[in-house]
Length: 264
Image (cartoon, rainbow, N blue to C red; front, side):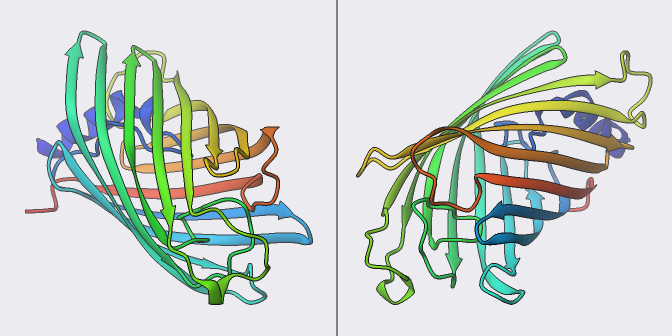
């Protein structure tokens, strides 16, 4: 019975499962998730890719955590780059008929042995550092809207810096995401496939220099049996003067598997 309720809950709010950002809502309590993400970046001098295996824990309705590892061929050969721990705490929930509002705080700590030679701070593979912030998500029937504001600090390591050009120590990040449930038109049971479409705007600003960028990121998603999720998305730079970075032309493919009521 718990499995049925948890599955129905995830299916009902599947349009909040954004591809490039996290919502303020959490995964069901006592659940475990496993993800495998592949990112491919089309930048000079050519194509590079990164794989991110990830385990997610839903401890209770308010607290969840992720553990990630980063592997890529960006430095000439495929190798382990580092890892990251992410936690999110939901501190506000307002529920109404066919709508709800969530607010959460999040934090991340990351390590990476990659050399640093871009203007961006990316704590999912490229930089060692810490990040904190807030995320707010509003569900309106089949439409979900979410906004994120975060601040990251990169740990400085002169031995890993490949050029004399100074690199940023701090970065302000912000995003606005939307998700819409296309199928099914009417829920009959939680095993029905879900098809969601997303459009996200992802931005960062270096407060030290004022350099910034804004990416647009459309994506599609299929959810099967309320437990298996498949994402496909692409992000590209639409505005800004921070062009020396990896993620400005990037596709993302992800498979995720969820197991409900498995944690004590």
